[in-house]
Image: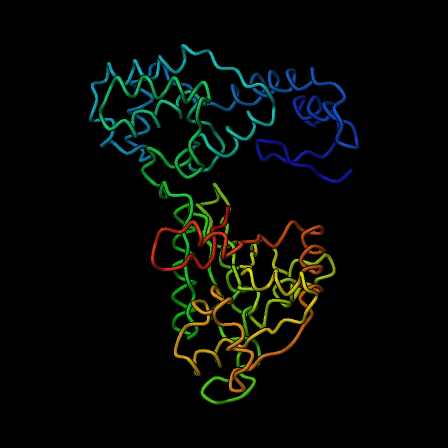
Length: 394
């Protein structure tokens, strides 16, 4: 049989070498994903801890020895721990262990120990238990408030609340990303704008953030650059760069980079972006890991409901005519649509609104994409002056 890899990253050549916990876990559901023997999940958890977690966890005689080691070797920041006495730190850790938490499923235990707890630099050995991670989070975010730290660690270990991944993963680490989950960027139309957006997206991804980018202002494929007709590569050229960037700029291998691009549905490149997630998409046009989303003004739904044609616009010609970024106009199509259609200096093309809606439904059934943001509904609840033009990754 072909080689497999176990949870410790070791290659396995035969069925006999597959870890016991993997075999137990494979018995939980049948080939169709239906529950078969849920008791096997408990056995998988027990085996995973006895034969993998316990065997691969670095042993320390005392908590002080452990924390000193993690500080001296640049695993932990020191500043947040210095806000407490060692006896207080010890009590917070003990509070976590007093809960006597047990994982209910193998997959939850695997997720924590594979993705979140601290490991040695070569990732071969475990430096934290689940309770240790929760204690560090409580101490850090309580900012020296000892009683608050005890309350927080109890709630964390009991899973009364769970922080988002950036907080769960990065808290207390000397070499870490940020605690913020989501960042939103607007991409301009010049090469400088695109390069800057690419750099910002990679830096944010490196720090553990999920990033969404609005590409509505990027000129469409075939538009002119410096009056040279047909020079623009369009939205997909930028999307492909971002797709590669997020795969490259992960969080030191601990967590994959994640990003999404949004496009207003009245942008001329919308069909090409949709096709990137179709089952039939070839390697050149497919977006492998980058998520996609569409911004849908009410005007689109009105045209689809009436089974009328819709016009897709070329953003650069809109900017040249009105001096306003297309994204600002496209989010308010109730006001602008008829003006754009009637203006012969705005380049446009006609498609069926209902067929566009059908295409979206088909692509969603195949891939789960695109995300949809209903612009007018969002902005009815928006208390700010500027409109919300796109959404986030998650």
